[in-house]
Structures are given as C-alpha cells and as structure tokens.
Image (cartoon, rainbow, N blue to C red; front, top):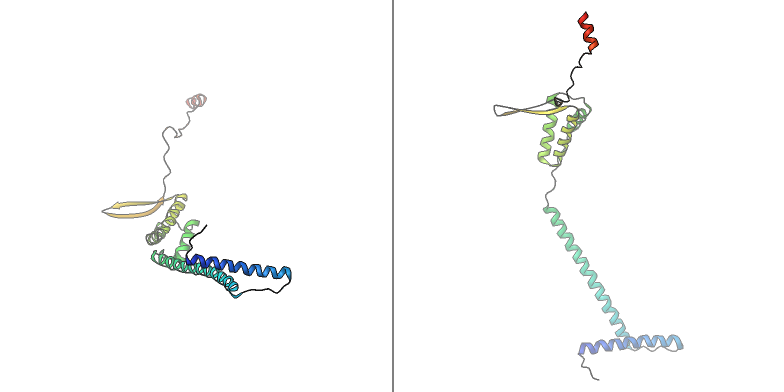
Length: 190
C-alpha cells in the first residue's frame, strides 16, 4: 500500500522516528550498560519537538496575558464611563439634630422642618437619602407628629402637628351606661 505524503508530513514522520530512536538508544544504554549512541538528527528532532511544545505553551500564555490586559482596559473604560454616585455630606449639626428629633428632645415644628428640608435637599442630590427622609417621617409619625401642608394663595405652608387619633365608627363609640332601675328609684325618692 502506498500513501502520498506531503513534505511537511514526511518531515514530521522523520522527526518522530528520530525521537523514538533517541529514546530507544537511551533505553538500550540503561539495560546493557553499553555506550549510548545518540545521533545528531535524533537529538535535534527531540529538542525541536520539545521546543515546539514550549513555543505553543508560551504563545497560549502570551495570548492570555494580552487578553487580560485588554479586559482590564475595557473594564477601566467602562468604570470611568459610569456616572459616579454624587457625594453628599451630612453635617454634624444635621446628624445631631436628627438624633435629637429621634430622642424626642426636639419638638419645635420649625426645627423639625429644618431637618426635613436638609434631608429633602440631600435626597434631591442623591436618591438614597430619600429613604432616610421617609424613615425620618415614620419616626415622627411614631411619636404622634405628622407633616401638614396647607395651601393659601398658591403658597404652601408646612408644619409638624400632633396627629389626630382616628375616629371610631359610631357603633364602637362608648356610651354612658344607663342607670339601673334601683338607682332611678333612689334618685326619684330624693
């Protein structure tokens, strides 16, 4: 049987034959303790095959390093393109005021409105502070205060006032108990 081979295939087969010859020559030298005979083409084929394997590994490592560098550059560009969250500071005075309001030490409507305005301004700059504003209102509601807004001549007037307790349905309202018959008779005799 004859198979046509290209020159590259023929050279690869010769390289494998020479590598096997090197391994066979080294194995014979170990078993027989004879002089090991290694020819230059055998050694060259073996070293060339090892060099080729090393070149493929180095090429893959280089490609991976380049890909990681490109990924880092793309990630840095993406991070710089994203808008950064604005930096909003809470002054120590505002923080102390919030703590005083939470403890009940501040009950003045104007002082509470000042705190509300400061939190609202921070919430306009950074959306997360709107959650703080809602918690502030919930805390005041728990203390029985609500924010009332009244409109007069197109102007809004806000104030914190004591919340009215919810009215009970008429069926649940308590009525004065009827006097007993004995009590009515005693009051009639007197």
